[in-house]
Length: 282
Image (tube, rainbow, N blue to C red; front, side, top):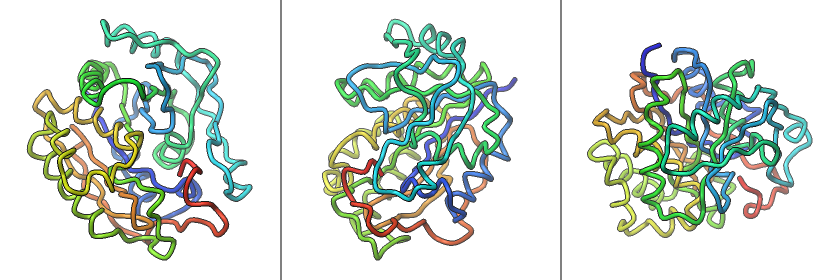
């Protein structure tokens, strides 16, 4: 199998799992237009812990890591098989960086399944998930991303899932498909840096809107994995642009994807009434 691409997807509101809009339509088209991988490695913002680990169970559970959303979202299941052999392969590939094998603790959280529900709706591709180590500096994640690169030659599609801009305290419910000026400005800076020199993506930390766009690092860090994967000299392609709820970027990027830019369809899915805007793991 030839080298597979790597992706960063802005996943946004978990209600996108059940929706048909211009972002979920794009995710479906991306899945249709890529070679079917042997396995998927997902780096999700929502497994943010004090260790580096990869799921290594045969049947990862579907984790509903939020509250206040409609019952149909809690009823959703993504029954993709796990891949303990792939987990062990990943741990071996990145040495001397250590990755623990999680055989029974985690599973697939909504940072993974909200996107995969559209990319691979049959749940017929094995999935492993890599944690985001909250104790490591940002540079660690770029280095680890670079070390994952050989997996692309082994039939493994790497999908990082987060959001370039993610500030739940600034959500505007009336702006389902819009972004604040500062969200656009920071998004533009990241687009420029990823196109120009992804290895130095941390230069955007000096941007005047960084603290507003990235009040906590969990959703930004998955982008660093794609930046690390792009340090081999491949061009980073912007696949999707857009914003949701004022303070969430829906931007998506690809390395080696050679896909069209997507943007057709209706806007982002609104946040349901009654869902508190923070502490919901949106």
